[in-house]
Amino acid sequence: DRDVTGVQTCALPILKIQSSIELGTGGDNTALGDGEFFEAADVSGFPSEATQSAVQANIVAAGYSQTPAGEAAYGGTAPQVPGTVQAANYDTGGQGVGYNVSSVNGTSDSYRSDGVDLETTSDTTDTTGTGANLDLGWTGGGQWTRYTVNAAGAGTYTVGLRVASPSGVTDALHIANLAGTNLSGNINIPATGGWQNWATVTATVTLPVGTQTLVVDQDNGGWNLHAMSFAPSGVTSSW
Image (cartoon, rainbow, N blue to C red):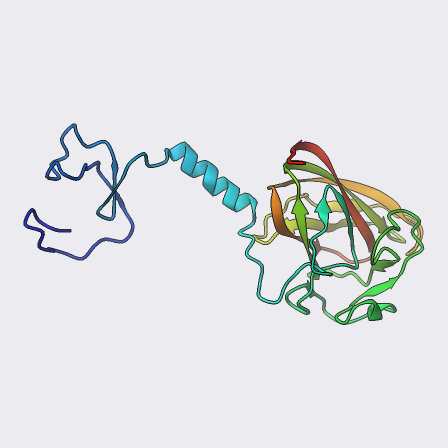
């Protein structure tokens, strides 16, 4: 802060909105002042509280999606949503970045240099594209895989998950963002009769537009995942 002579009288406070001051009026808060005083800077047309809240909501919805160092979409290009995401194509970066597993298993891990818990699938749905011949297995509570995707529009998507489970699992998994927000709710998997007997379960997620990272959190083990297909169900499209 400075007095009328321009001499600094105290240290500036940490970011704090003060009352309205229009530069040139002597700082006397007369009716001429119609800006916002923000750390000694007059900001004309400072956003309304509603606008600031909307911006904050968008930031939260995006999951503070600054991805960790070393993480990237498998193959270098984020799959498009709407579209299909193959379970085998989790992000690169390795343990603790692209995935988290308690032990390394799998019979087809050579598909990728950091492959874990992958096997050949007999599913006849969603069989097009790189990694479509594989599924992700050896699931267990506390494990997760991350998938960077590019959503064409903001809004609600229906997710069809191709899953298999001999006995069925309650609260098998959920889809979250990087902030840890549960986007899908807890997803139950029915008994399909075998590790390679496949069925589709559905969930809904609300996504912001653009590139972002989704996390498939394994809450309880006992199931396999082949693919996730995203279809718009309440989306403001940009395509």
